[in-house]
Each structure stands twice: as C-alpha cells, then as structure tokens.
Length: 621
Image (cartoon, rainbow, N blue to C red):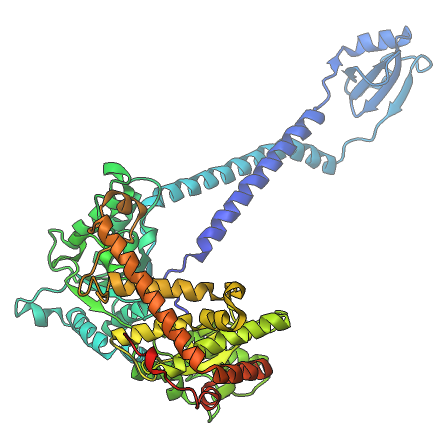
C-alpha cells in the first residue's frame, strides 16, 4: 500500500535543483555581458572646432568627412577609420563653412531613426537591468541555501493521518494477541479522561520486538488508524549525522511537533540504530549517537505531564538496547511479535490473494502448512511472485502450479536450467541428493522429504527439501541428531559410491550447516555429553565488544566444546553411513529416477524408498 504524507516534500529537491540551475545560468549571462562590454565599447573620438576642421581639410590633412546629422566624423590621411569629430553649426552646411570639396571626400550617413534610438537606449540600460536580475537570482539562491542550513537540525519525520486509505486492525491478518495488547494504547489515545479519572498514566512508549517482516510497522500504522490520530514516522538512522548535536536537535524538533499535534503517535523504526548500549568507548563523550539517545531519554521522561504522545518503536535486536531506554517510564510495554503460526499464515495469504484472480484448485491451507517459519513479508512475496509467474505464463488466473513455483522460488531460489552440467556432475549430484533423501526418509525423528531435485537452484547444485508436517515449538535432542545425520548423507553417499578420494565440494554448505548446528547444540542448548545442561555465552556483538570483554569460559572448556562438536558430527556421519550401506538398492533407484526426471516430489520419493529399512545399529548410541 502506498503511503502519502500530508505534506509531501518531493517538490523541495526540485526547487533546489531549479535554484542551482538559475544561479549557473545567471553566471553565464554575466560573463557574456562582460565580454559584450569589452568588445562593444562606444567610440571615443577627439572633438575639434568646426573651423579647425575646415582649415585642416582645405590644407589636405584629412581624407574623408562622414556626416551624420550635425555630427562629422573625420578620417586623417594615412588612417583607415575616423579618429576626430566635429559638429556643424546650426542651419549651416560644410560648404557654407568654407570647405573645399575637392580636397576631401564627403559622405553622408543616414540620420538615426527612432528604432536606432531605442536600440541605443537598450544597449545602455539593458546591461544594468540584466545585472540586476542576476544579482536578484543569486541572492535568492544564497537565501535558499541558508534556509537549508538552518533546517539541518529539523526533524525529517513524515506525518501521516489524513490519508483516505487508513490502516486498521482489520487490515492486519493474524497477530490477535498482539492486537489485544495494542488496543489499550488506542483506548488511551481515544479516551484519556477515562483512565486519568482512575489515576492511570498513559504509557510513554511501546516497544515492538520481532523478526524482520512480521508487521511491526503495519501494526503501528493500525494503532494510529484505529485511534484516528496523527502518526509521525521516522527511522532511527535518520537522527544520526556526522555533526555532533544534529541528532539531538532533530529529536527535540520531533517531540515539539508531536506535542503540538497531541494526541499523536511517534513511530521510530529500527531504534537499535540509535539506542544501543552506551559506554562502548567509541567516539568518547561526544559520540553523536549517545547524545541523540540521551535526548530521546530526556524527552520520553521529561518534566511535562499530560502530553498524550505515545512513542512506538520497532526493533529485531532488543538485546543491544540501552537499559535506560527499556525501563518503566520510557518504554513501559514490550510487545513480542513472533512469526505467524499456520492459522495466521493462512489468514495472511487470504489477505494478499484477495485482489488477485485465484483459480479454484489453489489450496491456501496446504500452502500455509508448507510455509512454516515464514514471516508476513515472505508470504506477501509469495503472493506477488505467483501473480508474476501467472502473467509470464499467460494465465488468466493464478493456478496451483503458479503458487507452487512461486513458493519454491522464494524458499530455495529460482531454477537455473540454463546451467550446463556434465554427465559425471549430474550423476554425482544425483547420488548426493539421494543420500540426503534416503537418510532423512529412514531416520524416525527426521522431517519428511518434500521434494528432491538435481536442477541447480540459487547457489546450490541441487536441493533435498525437508518440511515439518506441523509447526514446531521445541526441538528435541534426537531430532537434532537426525537433522545432523541427514545433513551428512550427501557427503557420505559420495564417499561410499565414488570413493574417499573422489568426494566433491558439493557438500561444503552441508558441512558448514552441520558445524553450526552442532555448536549451537553444545553452546546454547546444553546438549553435550560432557557439558550436559551447561550453556556458554559467546558475544556476537560489535568487534570492539568482542575484543574488550572476556568470554565466560576457559580455554580448557573451549577445547571440550570443540571435542563435543567433533563427536556429534562424527556420530552423524557414522549413522548416515550405516543407513546408506544398508539400503544401496534404494539409493541407486532414487539416483536413476533423479537422472531421468530431475525433480521428484514427496509421493514419488516415498514410493521409491518404500523398501528402505532402518538398521538396528543406526539407532542413537
């Protein structure tokens, strides 16, 4: 949805561009006038008496008289242009004055007309007018730059509230618990006296915390729409500039505008850009970011009371925010917005497909089941990609195949069918993906196989896709170990079929994911053998923090963690090896089908691997 502010600022940049052009053109005109004045100087002829001129002419000193009205321009012998001038007496001619016409050439120029008079007048006054206009344009340009400099510390928040297509809670699908938490904020803004009569204080701030794309900004807009109050929107990064004090000035200006428009809402998106913990030592005591944060703290907990201004802020990194920002009296409430569950995903998909022509065979419930872990933005992207793919295929309606292709495109990347693969690479990829699928299919606590393909997608040579049958809140130790084993299935299949010396780089991302998962199990989940029920903090913040702060475990413990990670990966590889060796016929059958068809869905995988068995010695030990 397009959001149009009340006071659009698009024309300001065009005005500044026009002023800069006007100043440049004015300078060019001024330079041209200087050149014109230099090369078009008026004649500066010496004036002599008429009697002297007649006398010298009769003596043969002049070669030419050029008469124009009563003015006579004189050319001296030996020269090419007039250098003297004189004036005839009124009511007298040169002959009357005694000029001998045989001694000098006399020519008469036409008398200056009124148009020539106006031209002469323009040549005299025109440059003065032009210079005046140039000075005026230059002063306006300088004044505009001065106004821009004076507005440097002004807030850049965009004001919403009068647009026709307001966002309400009914426009936000799912997130029912979150909307209930925010409805009280709406009540505070609508009926402040109702709460003030009971001694309740309006909350100063509400912090929305959640992963990217979960609808934090839309929920803030919905609060403003429901309460029917102005809505100031700004990003945390817009406060901070390279000049110290500018951010604090913008904060003061923003809250000043908000108080004039009270009751209203201030929404600060990505507040972690300016609200990080102070005292990092970066920038010293004059750190611009810290000064901006200090001003926000003062404004949110100042001495003024009764101001119906609520600050909504959004972040996906609440752990890095300054404690002073999170205490009661500033951000009184913290609303956690998680990824939508299956019911909410279906509702979100219905909203995004409402205005799109959808075929009757499209099953949005099945799509919602497959999109576990997707945010609202991901689902909106799937709906948009479905429409694009349908248009590309010249469909009048969005079909199930269009939706499926869009989902796979968003989840695992587009197919790269144009990439040429040799027969050996194609066979190696088929064995690799078949190894993943076989191990994942056989192990009891692994997610079911959704699709297997040897067509390159995104940055991978092939994909084996596992999707949980339902949303999962917790993951058990046995499920983690089965995930590790199926992740190692591709490399182990290459090792068994091609030989230890023929393994390829195709397992690089698998090994990296396995290492990260195993380390997470040991360090964060307390699932090691020797370090069971112990977790260890590993600071993944700024580089300076990692250098200054010591880790909270010893080098000996770090060595034990490394050993535990190695043990988990070795165990997963051994289990995958046992499963594959016990089901080589199923592996070959799945490999042959992949080479023939390239892409196999879950039903075909289950049919091909129906005889695959779980070996007893592949159980957890």
